[in-house]
Image (cartoon, rainbow, N blue to C red; front, side, top):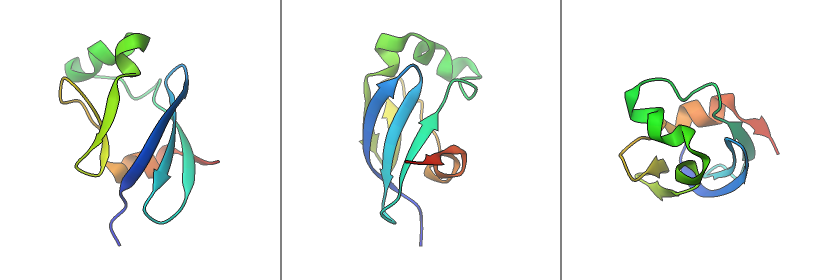
Length: 78
């Protein structure tokens, strides 16, 4: 089974509550994952909040995203 993000909600800071296709909800803190030029805009909290679910993961307007498997791995069970 491939892990997919099916729902995402902003919590605070750089934390998201994600629902995966296996039914698990995990809290993901991306504060230590915003490295590299594509992630620079996400350091602005207002920009960070403007995500959507696209291609089974969380994505931002500039094309920045994270593999759903990575999000699942770093998340803590909610």
